[in-house]
Image 1 (spheres, rainbow, N blue to C red):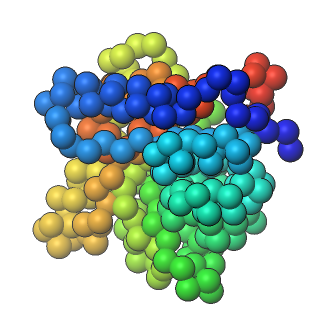
Image 2: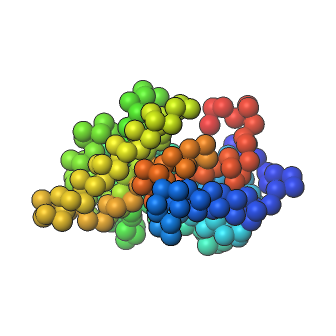
Image 3: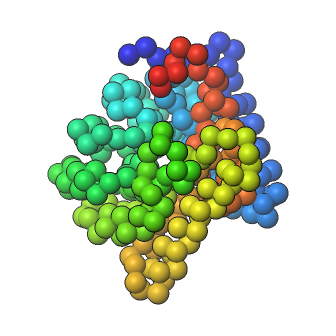
Length: 248
């Protein structure tokens, strides 16, 4: 497993500050100044030293995608005070790694995965936050449940012991078309709003599902305009991955 070392000349504090400045400007432009959109740093493909450096610079919320990589880096990340989220597609046979190290799995997209996480969470006596991943773009290359299935699955997952559904996550449409990308993000916001409205009325137990994890380096402004509470940023903070890493 080859991982990138700390980039030469990289200043993680400056890179993180630049992204947070973008977030603050986007919040103000959307009429959401001070709304507290959080930045999750996607540290996949970077080695433990690089990941720890960004944590020590203030990026304590980190996201990992591959469980083999998480297992290798997690002890150093945990020692540095990182709060780890799983943001890549999770196979059930790797779920134990997620439960051991992560505080949240953002990519729950099936009842079977949720049931596995629930069992492991109870065995470890370690409650786990989860998000429901929704495929709002309809692209076959993207994981996630169909938007029409998001609320029923979220309700079923919330009923499982050991798990708390804290919101919904999506990977935006891969397109430079702002209107099209924002349409998908707006769809996720509508799903979240319905979960909260129905919970307030007593017909659904998803009062904790208020978070929207959406938006990345290239489109975080569009996501914030549509209500994102968390953006997942890799390249803009860690730097570009090599072309040979396309398999990631």
